[in-house]
Amino acid sequence: MLISLTLLALQAPSPSAEHATDHVAPLGPGPIEAGAIRQEDGLKALDLAPEQWSGDPRFWSVQDGMLVGESTPENPCKRSSFIVHEGIFADFDLSLEFMVTRGNSGVQFRSALDGKWNVVGYQADLEDGPNWIGGIYEQGGRGVLVRRSTSLLANGPNSDYDLLADPDSMKDIGRGPGWHTYRIRAEGRRIKLWVDGTLTCELDDRTDKAALEGLIALQLHQGPPMKVLYRNIRLQPLPPTKEVPRKWISTADKPAAKHVGLERRLKATAGLKRAVLKATSTGELSFALDGEVFAGGKDAPEHLEVELPESALERLRDGKPHKWTATCETEVGPASLSAVLQLEYQDGRTEEVHTDRWWRKAGTKERAVVIRPHQAAPWLEAPHNGNEESEGQREERGAGGG
Image 1 (cartoon, rainbow, N blue to C red):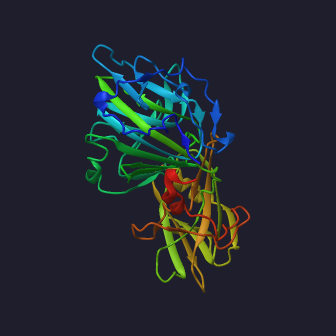
Image 2: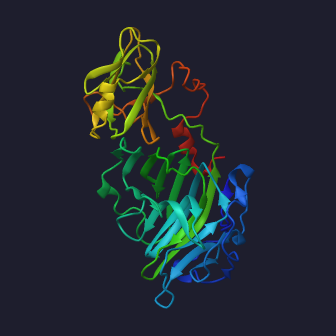
Image 3: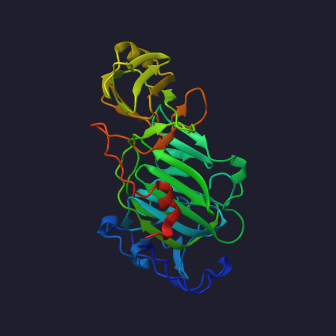
């Protein structure tokens, strides 16, 4: 089912920006009380009326079915102003059309109120310019999280990234006269953005600052006179994501390899107190730090759970990046493994480094391949059934699925 955020019923051809000042409808009376509508209230189609939005009437209005934000020389916006929907949503696929005739805007999601008509949280950035559209910003928080054309793992000192495309190839995306499209898909800790149908960035936010539910809002940025218009805002709620960050991984070798070596950068900080490795594989498994084997080996049990020795902890406390390598060898193949390294600090902080697509085939830049699990360790989720819809299939259905 689709949830329409007030703007589902645009039947007639949409007016141009020049004629968007007709038929002004009232907004909500003031700051909303967050949580009037929650995703878990049901996945039925909702017709969210204009009074379910709240924004400063000096800057925001409903005009011919569009949400319009505008500042002028006579009515300057000295502090970013947000129009806020009262629903709270967790996992979803959101799509909308926008037009920026001048200035800067953004689509807030999984956000929270911070005073009257002010919002903090994730923002899908949007502008009439070449720099920021298609990236993820955290309003009132960490600032720029992911730049356009980038896939980012946010995991403290063990963060990593890939380029989705040449940044210059996206410099004109979402620009030019007329309407453009934005799509935001949030599932668990993973967020993806598309502008005009092109995937512009990905975020896998494994930090303790990750927001897993919140409000949706639209921004009119402070500064020079500007005007932004939104229409056809549609939201498809998604089933709750059961977080299973640790994956079964292997290489892309064809035929499937009987011996695989996978590696990633591993970084800790001073104050590291303890490191516990939990792992399982389809064969003989070992883990090495900077080439020195610290766990596993020929006589290791099928399901490995071991604390790293003090010598390994001392090496990691220098705060520098180290090479963390896993090898798996089997007589019948394919060789694959699943593991998590749990880091515990003196101050109570904890971090986890999982096997996932951010690993690489040893000695190369080739990313690991995430596969279906062959078996389940006591601390792993049970294997998926063969009828489960893949992530790619879910994304193909998009916001129009249901």
